[in-house]
Length: 207
Image (cartoon, rainbow, N blue to C red; front, side, top):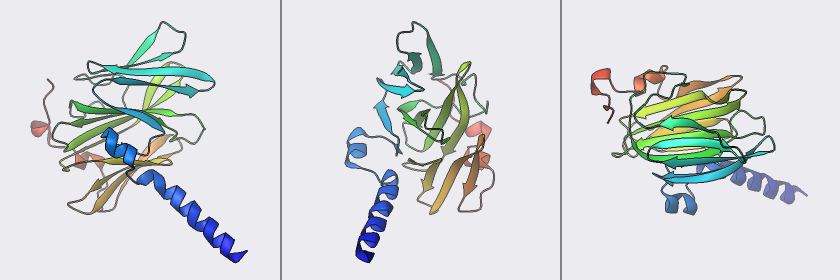
């Protein structure tokens, strides 16, 4: 009985850690956001997912991401490269264009997926991610992360949090959903996520 309990505990630990590990599928896909329930990468693609008994399709093409409910002719634009997301929490993020990751994950714990849009610049030193929730008036941003100046930047999603590692400093920057928003914490003592952005005069210019 004791041996069985130990084995079960080890299995549980392995399962809970699996979302933080880069899998073979992640390596093959080239994603820079690990741990999403489902996703696609690149500059074009699409996926279907279920929310509240309905099926939604999200598609990316030409730097524009749209979401539509199955059977509906109306599609909502949720991201347009080079433009500030009109419903975002923060309006002054540097604008970048490059590789995309689009996927779904339940950050809020209500058993319904949020939509995740990640964009990483071509030098892989800057990343933005938007977390969107379906509300009465459509998909709306409930959280954003933005990190620049970290070579090979990658994000990891686990339960209610999304984390970025800075290998040069050995630091972790984590945004965790609590109540109705994402709280920021850093292992190196950084208290303001704006410190992870470049100065305004060094921010990447919109194309």
